[in-house]
Length: 287
Length: 317
Image (cartoon, rainbow over all chains, first blue to last red; front, side, top):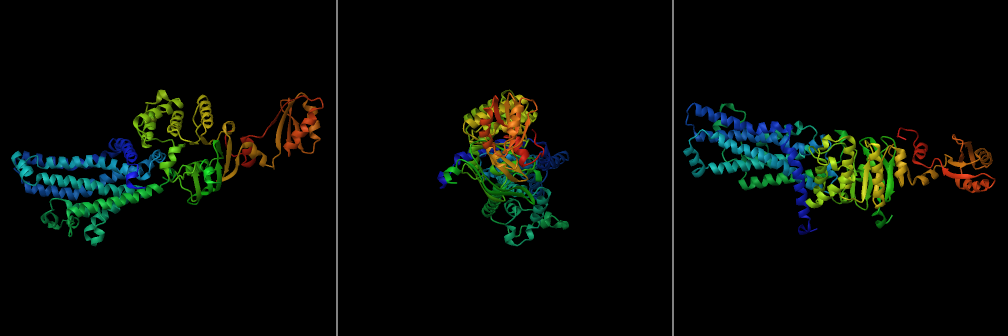
């Protein structure tokens, strides 16, 4: 069948139907409260930082805060908050329904299972992006909140502020795409989410020491290459900081290669997940 | 079987399913025509496994299955033609009965007006209109059973697979549901039902598949299956005005194994190894002044066939 003759309209309608069902589950859930906390914790941290600066009447240093933001974004937000947030959101897309014994609802519909993967992934992505994208935006506001409006306007409209914000939002989106695809696949293969989470976390941590080809099989490799502000060596290497080991990116990819590489990696993982879902059997008794 | 014929039947060709070391079903060969087919057998016989196999929820370890010519590996085609009411008593969270059906129809690709109309019709058909906009989480067992039935029906399939569909229904709804199955079968649907309640199976089935320990023990119309059980003499009840006379005459016939007065004293229960010959003889015996009111097989039903072939393992009579 040629591409033109494929039932795109039907597929689009089916994906929208999946999104409608999934959004309710992904956004409104008590089980997911910890993800909200994870996403908003850096905002609270920056708000506190700005509050202290204001209270002490300090004028602050925009450059220093920009580097602080870069460090927290890479060390905490990307590697922990988005990472574990995606564990919580994406691993439950299939796994959660097996546990709730409700996956057969989808499997009994005249629906290509590949579309189910796409629909569920998009719903997870939308939830993750709303949560972590909003968090990135709020973090950016909170970290510079105490500075004078003139300094902030200068940074945003005549400096790199807007460009950095766009880049951080882009990296947040790509992180959700990358980790989302990985943990959606992991949810199909593992019953216990801790096992893949620890394995992927370890793989991402040692990424900088791997041969070039293996580095490309990680999400963080591409994300680090896209972060607009490099972590200064002063933060990374001084004082015997163990985080220095994971902040190093000896051979960063160009932005185009990084974006394309991450998207290809995610597509391959999603394609493999589709094959797995196509073969999947309903056997709730085994869980 | 040619392709055209297979396109009208549910076909299992040498199908086996193992769950690890555990046998689900083994070497099943079936060709199920239209009408109501009941899967009968004790717990663990393989009824649900057969249903899950024909709907693609589980995959065979060996063999091939086709439902009206479609492989269960193609859910995008199969479920336009098939509806499955499973035994799973779990639902997507937070949905009302109406939303449960409406969302299913939207997943099937139906546009809003069609999905809305079909959901409404299916809800009416299972008498759940009053509870349609209440959350399923608050439904009784019988209501949940009915909304699952409505889901299986709502997209107007040609094949209905119903796993214990009468479980949890009160007697009135049970009777209505059985009538619904009958009317659907008359509309030309294939209906495959599993049930523990043998007298209900007997009342509604056009054919039965008897399962035991993962094997098909017998299949076909009950009468035909009964005739194949040569080890057990056929039982016939003859209602007449002079049962003692008839019993003594009948007992002299060499094809008769046993003849005894019916417990109510209004007839004779005869066991014979050759029913056809006995029926011919009966015409002659009746000419001797005995007024015969009725002649009917006494063990030509699912319950008897079940007991002869499987034993007295648990099902509800």
